[in-house]
Length: 266
Image 1 (spheres, rainbow, N blue to C red):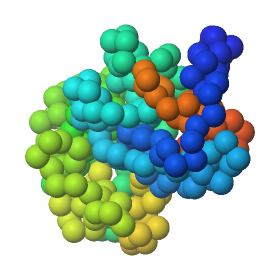
Image 2: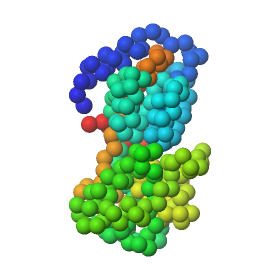
Image 3: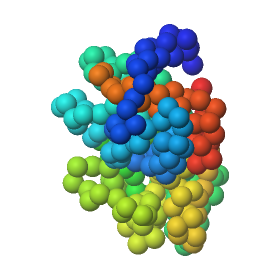
Image 4: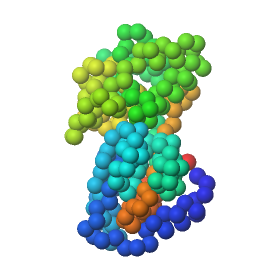
């Protein structure tokens, strides 16, 4: 990433004053970050300059809408760069900083014949129920839509067919909240609501730990889509919010994110 020094300077300006120990940092974050950020928050709280962290997890697009309407927050961690940039452009947040990277995987039921080389043919099969998250509301759905566009370059008519058959099973306003102690994608595939679900690899890995019978299949590079995660410190944030952002960018913070399958930002 470029402009490293100016961005770090901007963060530093927000963290100049010491935070009161009792002040909890309020963070709105993409649901795919739940496990990693929960552990990172526990580590941050133990630091001399740390603080307790309270989270609101959910689809990044819906969280952005809540923040645009004035919901209080100190840090917004999104599964894309566009949503935090929109808040920064509106003067509601400081500069955007990429802090992690993810990619898509296919989470499949045990009876599905699936391999990277045959994945496109498999998800095009009319008999295969293909699940995705909701585009616009959740970046994961947007990335699936981009994958469908990539599929068109490999097989004529694939994009239209995939967009028509894809089941939007998570991430929308009408969907129930995900289970507190389970990965929703694993539940969906295990129950047979989808035979294959396109989700972040970090989600797929967690889902397989919970449902060992499921398959996690890599998506070929010419079909796959990379996801850059962006973070902003909100305007008027507590000083500890800026320090949390710096912690997530630090080697210690990056190590925690890496342990959950996130790659460092480019």
